[in-house]
Image (spheres, rainbow, N blue to C red):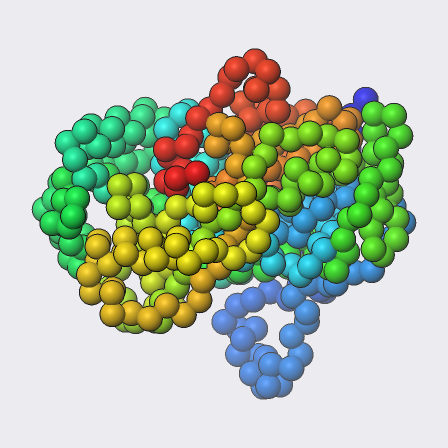
Length: 448
């Protein structure tokens, strides 16, 4: 037996079932004194006490000896899994273990793009479910995640690439996802500062208008606050050092804060998944590669959509604070370091200067890297493993942030029912034995 525990697109008028679900979740969360509702009225009321009486957004807990579910990794995926387990499946005795600080991994080291413009039906269904959850997430969690559906524009620089992008956009339409082909005049009107006659002249492109960006740390904080209010224990500074296997099951994890027993365990640790899984006796086909990004000094709003180019190789957006957020290719070697290399930084900067020459005058303020977990077909590995009560959420590569809500929702279902969620079935570990690969390397938008 595995681990069986007792057992969601913006629309003007939500379906009745969705409205009831939302009310139930809110009543569950707001009944907990640890989570005060955020509103204009509460902001006004707190002003009379100099904002000193706000409760903590989440509780930093001490570990207990036993939990129903232990989730390793307090990034977006781990926190979302705990939130949906508690609110949709009634599992309250949950611990989320984090060796560092909350959101200190890939969840705080990305370019915050949210899109579902994937090619294959399996990926399209999953990522569009995630995008639909993002559309309602601020309302569901009572937290402003600064979600801005400004669109995601993919450029093409040759007639051959134009035909490939047309095929990509048509596949999206067949999968029920919005896409629109654009010519040079459309792109010039949409992004006037773009250099269409660059070294590889722009011949057109396509856009997903529902795509956009959200504040990455706000997403993490929102799920942490909601999960904590729903009863989950967030334990920071708690590093897992080993697993105690009893037959085909794990009985407990060893940590620097003592042993912790649980009925079920879930790994949500991105680029470190293969390391921790090996400690549990499980081999995962994951490579860890640093994906670098950087931001410039803030400027007034000039870029009103996300722009990506596979040929010149950069993707660019403007944050809510006015910074120009820049990403490009992954480093060419395996690494667990949360930093990039100078050559990648120079390549990214030169690509941006080629596409938008006016940005060449901006100064870079910060740069960082996330440790990406790349699977052989550039698609995630999520769900059950050969160890009965161990579940994994890994292989997200460069798409982990955009997958946070759906990743947590579907993994929570899988853990609670000990049966893969319908959207996760194509991403099971056994696809490498059967050959049912889902090669989304191109739609990832990053060379790796």
